[in-house]
Amino acid sequence: MVQTPGGIDIEAHQDSAALIDRDTDFKDLGLADVLVDACKSLGWVHPTQIQKKTIPLGLKKKDVVALAQTGSGKTAAFALPILQALLKETLPLFAVVLAPTRELAFQISDQFRAIGSQLGVVVATIVGGVDHMSQAIFLAKKPHIVVGTPGRILDHLQNTKGFSLSKARFLVLDEADRLLNLEFESAVDKILEHLPKNRVSFLFSATMTSKVSKLKRASLRNPVKVEVDAKYRTVDTLVQNYLFVPEIYKDCYLYHLLIQFSGNSTIVFTSKCVSGQKLALVLRHLNFKAIPLHGKLSQSKRLDALNRFKSGESLVLVATDVASRGLHIPDVDLVINYDIPDSAKGYIHRVGRTARAGKGGRALNLVTQYDVEYFQKIEQYIGEKMRLYPTEEEVVLASAERVAEAQRAAAVEIREFSTKKRKRDE
Image 1 (spheres, rainbow, N blue to C red):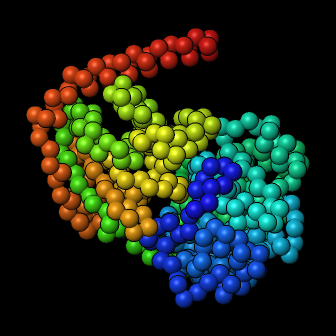
Image 2 (cartoon, rainbow, N blue to C red):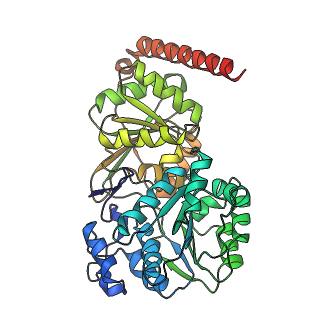
Image 3 (tube, rainbow, N blue to C red):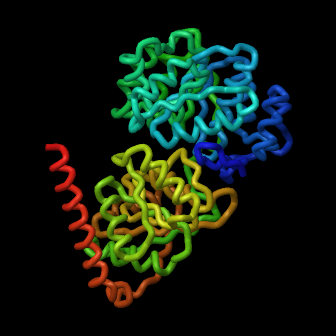
């Protein structure tokens, strides 16, 4: 495993869904020796199926629509053809990569740097939550690769003098199904207007939604579609259980589980930023080193939370779905769905944070009286009836008073913070 300067761990095909082709090596795909050596230095001996299918097309400068899940090795599938093209034609602002989250943008940037470390590749990561002026100065130096979120890249296109994508040779839309929702669609459309029509485009998506299909028709030239293991499913090494709990006692059940699984690396998923922030505070008052990760945190705090969790400094990460897709967080033992997701695909992405690379893992789902319908749809979709996780209500509720005290302390802390913030803003 290699750790890049940005703190992102890059492993060789870390997910069992990667479907490694052991009969092929990277040299067989037509890659230059320097890139083959770079792959070997990262521990990548054999390409994954998505890399085997995509890289030769990318080297021929074909537009590609690739359907691949998280952990399939898709970043290298588009990074390697772009870097090989750069070997022959070193131009500034050579490629632009759009990602739906800041964390994923940083992870993609770090992988470009890791693979291209011997090539002198300059990569700019352009996301919100980071000083606009420092980004503008970096862009003025004409980096080869620009990776970023749509909103901030569009902001620079409209407001940063000299920044242009008019000569970019490559466009990548990573997790295109998310990029084309209401939050990003308008910005993506406007960015496309700034790009040359004779570019090479790679569109990576977990699913072929109607919007992805529409973009394919509108923006790609005779694209080749590649697909690997497109069926959504959970892996065999994942143990999945549920607990049926009264909404009012969710925190008690969560506390009980975290004590039972103390010492395990755990991600607790919530549906909203506010509830995640509050829950992390409650857990801190219950003596867990819990850290929040959600979209309302500053970028520096989000990266700090990820790095502290990965390093083992904190064993409990309370996260929204910002952590459910795209990010490689190694060695997660347990996923707890504090809030049941409203879609089966969202559930699969969440629990995919554990039981990776053939390792075991567990998912525990807190199902309240309000979640039954969602939960049953998840079971139906994955084709599995989950088993009830055994608990004794008397044992769980013995902690009710202590948990209530932690909830009150967290509420006071939130009010005090809100008051201070309001005074600063006045």
